[in-house]
Image 1: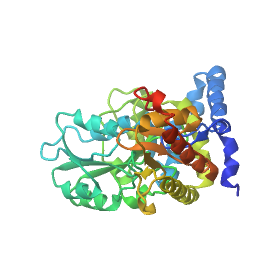
Image 2: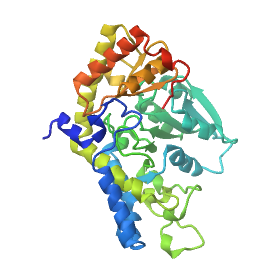
Image 3: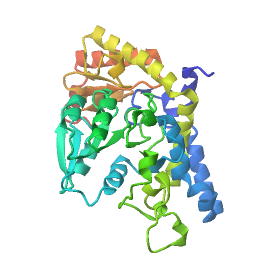
Length: 385
């Protein structure tokens, strides 16, 4: 078995930077350009034949690989462009909306892109909750959907999913679990959790790059639903070009238009590594290293915003300092990459390839930047990625 640090050679950016940003953009695996070149070669040499020779099937084939990582059975996960589109497809299954069941019970700390989607619908009532306990309390017979995050993005807090699923199913509501901040870093099994849908993407811990969102649909539910946000790839016989829709079986009916094989092919470079290392092994190391980070921050007198309970802590440690955006801008100039989020702080996300020395370096540099005022030239101009 390869040691975790042996995988550093798989990520070119580690040769130039201290990379603690996998919670926002996982580093590109070395094989990704090779797979993009394979796509380009197929396009150049095989042309239209490429669809039959692999391109058309990538949303299902690559979806199955993501499914293995999240505990989903084959045929229940497909690739989408991003989470917003995936959730819009789910929502479309319930149109026209029943006025007696039009509530979306939502947590304030979820990633806001999804909230924008639901708030933009004039026939939905969005009930905003402060934490996972309030979500359970606010779910009732008027609830249609409960979109929740497995791990909250700002402070990396793992949510207590089981009581939410149990309460939702008691009243006939459906749970959509956003796994963007957990897939690839926190072990999960969507089958055991019993969620109706799960969504996520590959930009972060899966190291699969952009345009690789995905959607899981509970198999017995998939056969009952008919999305109205749809396209020709969702048809059971797409190349028959029939006038009326006849949905494909399983999760394939939740596809839309022409797929993105270039992104899907490149994304497998990251998924292959995650499968090879194993999420349980990644999680064990992540817990150890986030604990180290918290210890370094405590010793330096820095405020830690992430949960200290390892059972509630995801893969990121958020450190709050005065003028955090400017402090992070200087940190980035020094080749230490994480990010900054307003209302939270500087987020540092070690992954399986991170060294312990890099964690110490990041905290030491934050302390030095704050102590010397090196952040001051960035005041008011710091970018947020």
